[in-house]
Length: 329
Ligand code: UT7
Image (cartoon, rainbow, N blue to C red; front, side):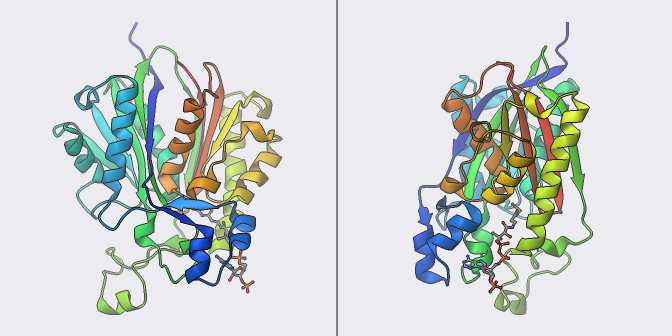
């Protein structure tokens, strides 16, 4: 029988070497370790070097995933990168990554939907496999958010960070993808955006002077939206899969704020050990946060065959999504 399902067979992850602590920010901004820890749960984050780009992080994460299952880059039939911080406005970072890995002729494209990138990317990549187009697809959530941080803006600079997580998806008789719920509302892009440098407002000298090359966020509004959507999307995904809260073995949420995750976990009545949180170590790595957390959990031996995982994310767009995923070895 032709396999029509999809499963994840390997996860690789990578973060840049440079660590920035809350105290490092307290030395240059009007902030404190106490404020950042209590408001966000973050303690440290990794920031890329000036000469390190998103593709550099993605390539290492991809190589680590390939090593885990002894595959070569050409065994992957299609590459997808989820990122809001591509190397260039064009070409796609995925094509740069595939070429750097030595798989220059494979199809490769990016998914750009902010911090929901991994969730959307997982649906796109899984669908390619389930439709029978490709037997193996690599999805990499990779970001260098530090490159769009305004180091003089305490309300964003302390939050966002860099990293990459790569998953290899393979055709499978048993299907991991149980259900999904995706959404987006672009009526107020300014809630979380980079004002200049796109076609709406090309970069000018004045724009640079106004720091419009950097991310701006209405934190409080995004916070409220995030809690609501995380809960709603999870509820709907569970319902679509005929599951209830108690069927969840692990919640792997986008790591934007520990208070957002705690609120969702409370609503879902999930004990602490079933909610994967690594925000203290990495900050908000956008499209990379979920695959990094998944990779850590697998390496720690936490996840076993048959476990039901909820991947849930939200972010710029505004956008959101939840996926019910059964772990198949
Ligand atoms: O992944 C993409 C999606 N992003 C998110 O989900 C982020 C969602 N938002 C949040 O996580 C939170 O809203 C923040 C962490 C960004 C802010 O926390 P908050 O509890 O919502 O604080 P606030 O924005 O209401 O600000 C409270 C105060 C303000 O001062 P005033 O106006 O009360 O005097 C801010 O200026 O905290 C101030 N503040 C800071 N103080 C010290 C903002 N950033 C800092 C800082 N250090 N780093």
